[in-house]
Image 1 (tube, rainbow over the protein chains, first blue to last red):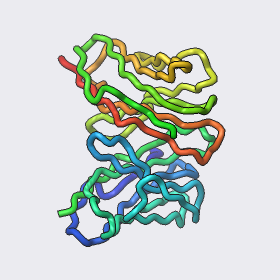
Image 2 (cartoon, one colour):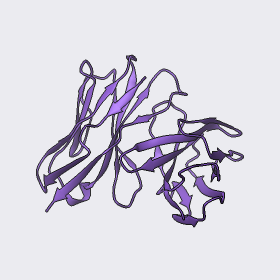
Image 3 (tube, each protein chain N blue to C red):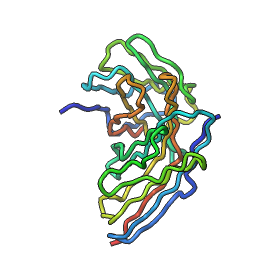
Length: 113
Length: 116
């Protein structure tokens, strides 16, 4: 079945360590997105990519980095510079028809101890 | 700046009853899309319903329908015959139509509880 796979589902890390969250899609979508979800905050955009080898900062990009070397993959690295990394991270993709419909993964819960 | 506001952080409804979730938005654009997304406890977000601003007819998907009031910039979601599986966070979202690089803007969500 086509869809978006995020891994790991749960991740625990010590403060100061970089962590990378995986996002893979087999929907042949051009655009991919990373959102952060905190209670009462809704979804906030971290980074997005409209095409391979290109990506743009979202509203809260500081302390995060991404790459888009393949159409199917859009990994997110949470660096030690991110002041409050404990959160739920959602990856999404969309086709480039400007309709805006997003397809989401199941999310990754990162807890920094 | 474009914003999306969901004024009800939580709501409850009795099973089989009807409930309406509110959403207002602010924009100077005339063409845009509006969405309601559902995030059940399993966490995977799915699209419930979409409305194109240039269409006057309110979108409907089975038990889900919207009341789109363009002049008032209001986009409420009505769930009829509520079922236990409707329990979830519901997010209202907005996207301008003209610029494909414009990002989708989400509200902060409404948590819906279904009472058996």
